[in-house]
Image 1 (tube, rainbow, N blue to C red):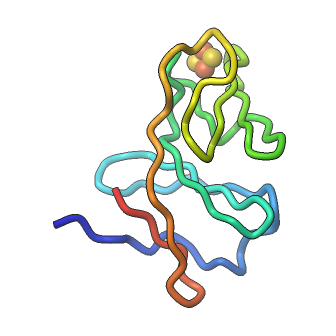
Image 2: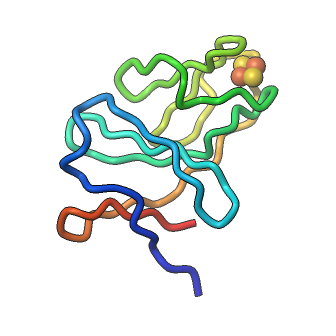
Length: 102
Ligand code: FES
């Protein structure tokens, strides 16, 4: 059975901050926006760009490689050249711990 993994302390984030963690062999970008945490795979579906290095506008992340945009809440593609959604992961808070489910 899959279990949640603690990846950070919630107090380490200001709104718009992100970190990249490796869990179960996957690179995951964890974002905090306005007190809510989101986690997506840190690999652009267009050509493997490092999404966490992109510019964040609200809950839209722009890939630093060729500019595809994704919604970090849903993983949905918002603009080309990517056409496939990015994987999202459930996030929860346990006390101060930020936990993700891979
Ligand atoms: S690798 Fe992300 S848009 Fe091309």
